[in-house]
Amino acid sequence: MLDGWVPWPEEAAQRYRAEGFWEGRPLDRLLRDRAETDPERVALVDGEGARWTYAELDARADRQAAGLRRLGIAAGDRVVVQLPNTDAFVVLFFALLRAGAVPVLTLPAHRESELVHVAETAGARALAIPDTHDHFDHRTLARAVRKAVPSVEHVLVAGDAAEFTALDGVDADPVPLPVPDPSDVAVLLLSGGTTGKPKLIPRTHDDYAYNVRASARICGFDSSTVYLVVLPTAHNFALACPGLLGTLLVGGTVVLSPTPSPEDAFALIECERVTVTAVVPPIALLWLDAVEWEEADLSSLRLLQVGGSKLGAEPASRVSPALGCALQQVFGMAEGLLNYTRLDDPPELVAHTQGRPMSPADEIRVVDEDGHDVPPGATGELLTRGPYTLRGYYRAPAHNARSFTDDGYYRTGDLVRVLPSGHLVVEGRAKDQINRGGDKISAEELENHLLAHPAVHDAAVVGMPDATMGERTCAYLVPRGPAVPPTQRELAAFLTERGVAAYKLPDRVEVTDVFPRTSVGKIDKKELGRRITALLHAEGSGAG
Ligand code: OOB
Image 1 (cartoon, rainbow, N blue to C red):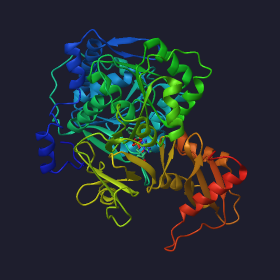
Image 2 (image 1 turned 90 degrees about the vertical axis):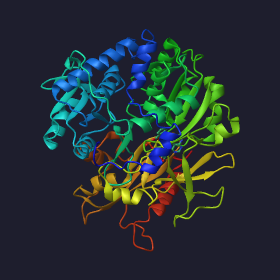
Image 3 (image 1 turned 60 degrees about the horizontal axis):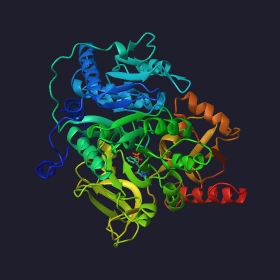
Image 4 (image 1 turned 135 degrees about the horizontal axis):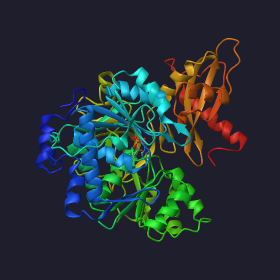
């Protein structure tokens, strides 16, 4: 058993097994099963049109698993994976599971600040990267991570490996490998974070396999499903809701899009006859516009899943007419709980709600600031526990004490109300996080970086309304003494130098002499939010 994570209490675990939510099978079996029943079907197509059958994908994963073991990667070792939407990701993911190692999934956009923290927290043995991606050399990043985190012995590179190990070369004749305990951690996902640094989310074989299986059922996935991966493969939504894994589970075909741009995605939808894909709202909005000028044939598309941040009812109602497919709203989180609008829900519910819990075993509560249940239909913070929702972050006892109730409910930080049908409407957020079109930014994490700037005395990061992204990031600064406050451009350069991911750079910087304070002396972020919203309105931009 991996140490440092919080398993479900034995009583709950027994119930989840007895009721069939947990099947006691390792996660990699979903690929093996299909390789046995449908070896010649196409499992995977990449952005360049290269194709792999189930048998080929399965064999590649076996050979790489054996190679990883030969390298010295042992059962229980954590391996930080930062790969874009390529076959290398899919092969490595299954190879690591088969080697008994635990993939730690990071986004291609993450930089030194995030990767060092993640590798350190995970005590990672290895790091897997592309050579370059999106005009960035990940080998330079790997050198910095290795220097800062000595436990990282191996750097595995997809492409030109320089002084590191080429992933392509990590192959060996398959060897029998020990079967992992299905109740143990299979994968560590990254949380959006609300405090200093991102947290790691342990997902077990049992719980993640259930996540995938139940999602695939609700979303009507079957062997005719052709799923386009548009979001990063490492994101829970694209990976397992039902995503890439849900498609492989049912013997469908996964198509990898290198980017979410309408040019790339629409061409692949037409060419591969894609039936379903998942996007965040800003991409949905972009696609709704792009169908006006892009000529592609999207007639194969049956379902567009939208989630990650709130989709407005107006754009929601435009999806079906414009794209000729059904819409599904998905309100999910890497921590677990998934809410889906159902394929047979009336259009009203699909346009106006963020879905209802996936599992009959999901327990939800909506509470006020004192932790008391609100009356039915009233807005409050969503708490949840269930067969695929974590009971604690990895190696984070102090944070866990705040993020969970004594009886194991996860405090989502999301403000919701529940309709009589059981559907949830997301009304806002109680957590100190900015949701920039699905990308989550911890205000505290960014503030800590800003406070390191010599000309910054104090910093407060708030969201500002934005028509496309839902919200963007505004950094309020109090300059240090007579120092000239940094401009937005200078700050961007400073934060980039510190290894902060580009999506976290403030979209706007406002300078003030003093911060408004609450009655207990905390920075009044609600007031700062009101100020920036008023300013945007005065300027005639923003919320739209
Ligand atoms: C997904 O996962 P994360 O871990 O990046 O972010 C989770 C948070 C939620 O707590 C909520 O604040 C927000 O993202 N969120 C939504 C939403 N979907 C997620 N807020 C409003 N409306 C929605 N539909 O974002 C994620 C994971 C799996 C499936 C889908 C999304």
